[in-house]
Length: 603
Image 1 (cartoon, one colour):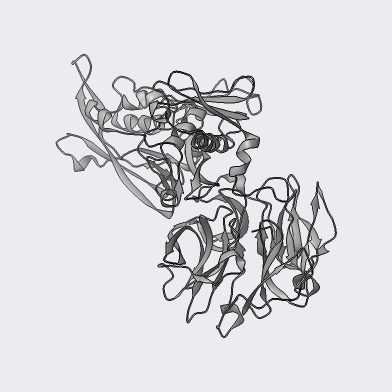
Image 2 (cartoon, rainbow, N blue to C red; image 1 turned 30 degrees about the vertical axis):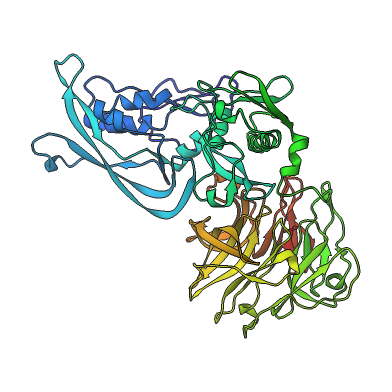
């Protein structure tokens, strides 16, 4: 039922073509190879009900325009009602089709075929991926006989089926890819990533290429989860000019985007911010190089143009330092810097101030994004200190203290957001709290956490550079899970009010998570174990999606991990067996310091 096409330029794996043997039915794709194309085959005349169901399941995995061939397996009424673009159900493998129970329909009016599998995620109509703990998926497809086109016989067709698409994970990853849309943090001038999934090639429903799909997704607005914390500069109702299905760049790598009349009256600064949203969004599409964006009116006249250099002012992480540097604590609790230059790492350098001199030994640390200050939890885990790390200075009083009896129940490792605010969790069983210290020196603000109930506590946290999202290791009972929370800020009189709400699981297939770090605008590097498995280090999107290529080389006994915001610097980790180790692009883990802890990048 499936015909896979090997492209003319792709020769590996196609050296030998069988010229004999039986034809076998292949169920779904086993690998998420984007170069594999699946072509739907229309139902043959007088096909049996089993063949109709199997053919339809295969046709759902194809790139057939409008899913026209898939709809040939449906009755006219079912074809009109089926909306494949409204949702995607992702299973671990292609759905299992069981045999119909013929005794259940003695009048032969139809047959019901049970479908089963393990559901791991859904994708909604706004292209947002929502992971789930693997759970049984049970649905059915019902077929009936209807008169053939010539009226002389009857043909089996599907009259009832699950809503949307139902795909195995391999077929989903072959057909869809993750991209980041960008919106402005509410009331701010920096952009926040909002990951969604688009088709790898032409979208069967809209007939749009990937660039146009991405622009359309951006104009439709943020996903429902992120919407309360971000703004779009595009006026409500802004869409692509009618009929646009393909967008490309000219010889100057300029992407020209024609919009409808809703965008005609925007001012210059608003247009620049709209163009910045597009430029950042296009940065995730490696298939196209976009150096500047030009927005056009419906008549083709230019609204504004913006280049990459100008758009840099809207980044959540501004390049205040030439190169991000990793830091760690040595065996004496002193803060050290690992200066990374090219592929070589120099000897650790003590930082100036009380954290480097050792007058305030630390158990955990966080360096601010500008690499001018650090926050550290003192020995015993009771007190949180903040100190400059560029000049010598006497120790300052603690900005926050925990009253927990046991050191393991006191303060977590701190984290800085891009605004310069400092975050830390108090793990005190008698009073578990999440705290935010404005600018790292103001009066601590207790963060509203309606989900932090008795028996639950935050083991560790990492705040995104944009200050809109927070990665939390939440412990409940004996299990520690990775959750992504949305940060919302309001003014309550003279005092700021800060909340972390709508926690979403980011690694539901992991039985336990040990450490986490941000690794870009919407990517995390996570250390954890799947049920019955060994410890893994892998990349995950903040929406919980992943791929087989995201697993990093194995490393034993990892207690902390840190990744840069960009791609040039190595991942750094603390291994109980090897001390501080690093993983440069294209290499394996290398030991840097035999004794150390709390490996971190700025943030």
